[in-house]
Image 1 (tube, rainbow, N blue to C red):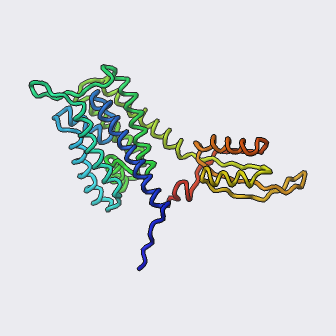
Image 2: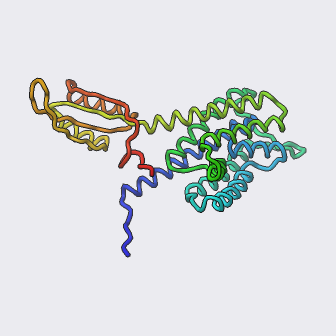
Image 3: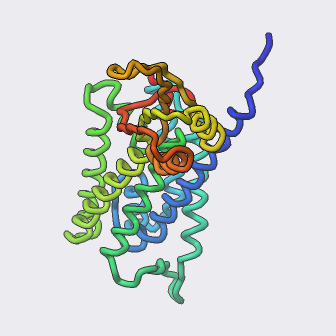
Length: 302
């Protein structure tokens, strides 16, 4: 049987997704190792559990992260079937490896053999909380936008969701609340727990902000005598598709060509600049679009 070879565009898209996922993972691990772990900040998730175990029994977070995720993938596979992608397994291995590498860089061991982690922003715990939360949110957003996953809590949530009709978002939120709440039992410090909740909220907010911002699309309707030149430049310079609609002015009965262009919101400024350069007198309407599915945008979900 014939196997279809992937096109150059498909290969580039896959490569781009993996590069985006790796960038997200690096930012996510840096936020955890440099800002959350040394300051005992628990932001929920697997890294929250890894931090609690590290400060309780001294087991390195990279090892904890790997062991717990392998266990969860096996458990998830038993309950949910082997639906976890290669991307998730790669992400877990890379995250565990990077946590170890980055942690070694900030670890000092005294004469008694006690480990201590370098505090990058001094004793500014709140500063570490803000930087760590924003970096964590950004890192996770890039991983999710690339179609990847960091494993962990979402596997537990998916498994529970199979038997009980509770939304995944609510489940993950409840699990994170429990993880951060349990930090009080180990540190006996109310401030650590409260700052942990603050870290989680900021991280989730920034994750949503980045994800929605990068996914948001806009629709342009352009009426111009130089419509051919505008369409050509949009095709070539911005690599966006253009649809030509044939319209008629109701009052003047004049036949006009109308361009319909769908683009990402962050591309709108470049598109305006391009239109202004070709025809400053063009009539342009721009509106936000709830969702755009198909080539160059999001995939249609079943």
